[in-house]
Amino acid sequence: MIQVKSLYKSFEGKDVLAGINATFDNGKTNLIIGQSGSGKTVLMKCIVGLLTPEKGEILYDGRNFLSMNKKEKKTLRREMGMIFQSAALFDSLTVLENVMFPLDMFSNDTYRDRVKRARFCLDRVNLIEAQSKYPGEISGGMQKRVAIARAIALNPQYLFCDEPNSGLDPKTSLVIDELIHDITTEYNMTTIINTHDMNSVMGIGDSILYIYKGHKEWEGTKNDVFTATNERLNNFIFASDLLRKVRNVEERELKKTKQV
Amino acid sequence: MHLYRQKRLLLQEIVKTMMIRPITTVGKYIMLMGRTFARPERMRMFFKQYLNEMVQLGVNSIGIVLLISFFIGAVITIQIKLNIESPWMPRFVVGYTTREIMLLEFSSSIMCLILAGKVGSNIASEIGTMRVTQQIDALEIMGVNSAGYLILPKIVALMTMIPFLVIFSIFSGIIGAFCTCWFGGVLNAEDLEYGLQYSFQEWFVWCSFIKSVFFAFIISSVSAYFGYTVEGGSIAVGKASTDSVVMSSVLILFSDLVLTQLLMG
Image (tube, rainbow over all chains, first blue to last red; front, top):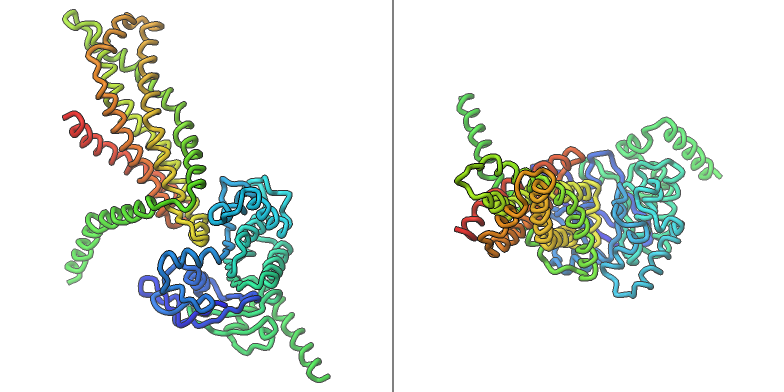
């Protein structure tokens, strides 16, 4: 479980995060949603330690990340996996070498065991056939799957995904979402996903945190979204006609169920 | 009042550009080097990277070093022959001067200026691209010291390979000089050979090696700094690449002055 308490972060005097409080449970896919510039990427970067907040606490199962020394942070980072918006695979390494990289760096296993583990992870994301290819030779969706395989290579307890569906077609996005969801429940990880893909919200949003101008505006699950009365959330999620129609149908269904 | 405010802002901007920014840059550079020279997390990964970089930065530069040195050696011989031709001047002076130029300045300093363009821009753009595509962030999240993993092998590899490149450059230049005798008939090959061997001092070769190792450190570390601190996109990477070449060249020229005075003065 990851807890964020009263987190503040500003850039050149402008508050980007203004006292955010949130709890991200394990075994669930926790989504952070919000408009562009609302502070969700900054929040994730603060949680993983790429940015240092001015005030607040970040607790990884009770361990305060911000008060840790360098060595403790390094140890904790080995329990983290991250999938970046651009996949961030190493261009000069093959797919297999990319997945093996964290194992090469931190595992004391033999070479054979490391290869075996990397192949297992690639098999988990159905990419074993692409193991000898370079990142530039595979599609965007495949790159994201390789990034997932690399992120889970060291059996992390915490998985962070920064807009994992960006630049992907809807069908591939669903595959990625399902993969992340399955892995989260399978390994009982604490997964935090930064997204503004509404399909992800409706599909895998076990817990959703809506951020508006650096503060927590709404919190709930994917089922709560349809009955939410928060105007800003509704304006954000149901921005398109299609989604507004979906909500109306859902509301009618809910009313019928209640009447029955 | 308005004019006074404008003047004050201008003064602030000048102080910022002339004083604060250079000091900040030097400070950041020193801090980055502090992180770079930390003990590698895995020695096997360091040696793997080190060997890769030796090939990429050193072996892949042999071709251009040989080519440029060959032609410069040949041109220096022709120029000196044409310009100092006199009945009072011994003919071996052409060979002697060619050797001194190649050994003392061209094969160390000028060759490193050329390598600052080739290797420096390569390092800056490679690391800069890794920065903008979040590959460095990925390393940091994994708990890897990204500066140590990416920069240290490059610095050590270039410092290892540069003396070999200097040797190749010297020999290629001398071959170029001989070619002007054999194929151009500019000079008698025996006179050139005598001049090349005349009053030879081994220390000059060592000076060349010592200078080139310093220059290798400048090229690799300065270029890595510019690449590592890129912020933005492809334009920023291009700017970092150019800045790294300019800054490396300026620092090479300045340190050449200091080192020459220290080693030979």
